[in-house]
Image (cartoon, rainbow, N blue to C red; front, side, top):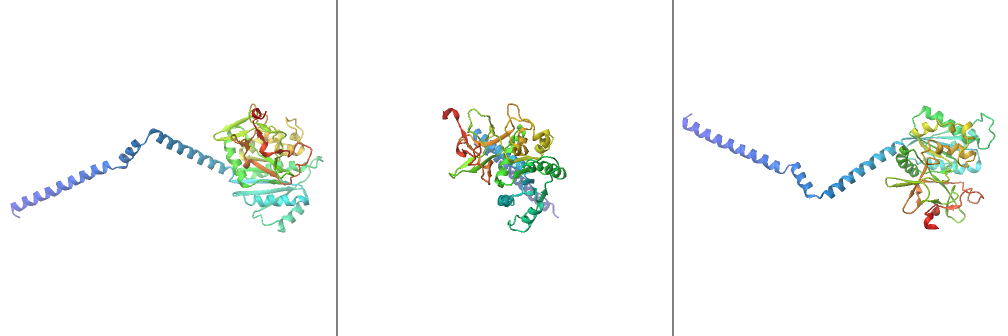
Length: 353
């Protein structure tokens, strides 16, 4: 090839390479100017510090909420539900209602019904006259093994059942109820959510019981007098408020596996101790079988470990902490039961008088 032609091709090649290099460098600078880092930096610089702080705070609160929801959900992963039912034809309707409500629980659960007439209860449950509960249950025959002639002796049997079944299965939480208790799933979710906050402080999340009076109004079951929010013991945890009721009767209990393992080591868990031990509340024989857990590991300065949620602004008890006594048997009695309208359960005593 002639020398002149070679020089021309050399110059053309050089020009092409130079153009390519310049184009490449230009693209680098363009990308650098429009990079996500630079763009993000510019966007953040245009925001006020207060806006950034608010966004960060909201993200932190959202994370905390999701964490609590996850922890609460873990308490409901696998439930053991234990019910005491002393054979009584008139009370089958309440047991039926209980089991129908339980069938709607949105988790894995097992139900054990303790009774003194296993054969009769088996027949009733299996014949289908009670409806479709959509879950399996176990009927536990109560056998008297001591000289206890109290008509409520069967109620202590749930301690034996809980001990045996929790030794074989790793339940996340355990619920105990008598045969006329209305406890919807939403109320259990509320219990779990509150327990996440209260358990680290040494408190148990309790319930309050209600009945309906002849006037059609809901009455609180166990309280003799309104709770004075300005004088009684209350605590606040995050955005929630809780009160320590002066009359902490329960008639049932709910406990996490961790709480239960500790409670079962308390001497009061045993019938021979719990049924006779001196306690600071006038609990009768039935209440001793189902409410003594509130006297376990009581925090300093309190008479029990029981906390009930309420709204500090409206001075109203949280409805999701309510457990209704379906038998509605005490509103007309002469004792303390079911006399106080639920709307008047909490007052500011200074303002009232």
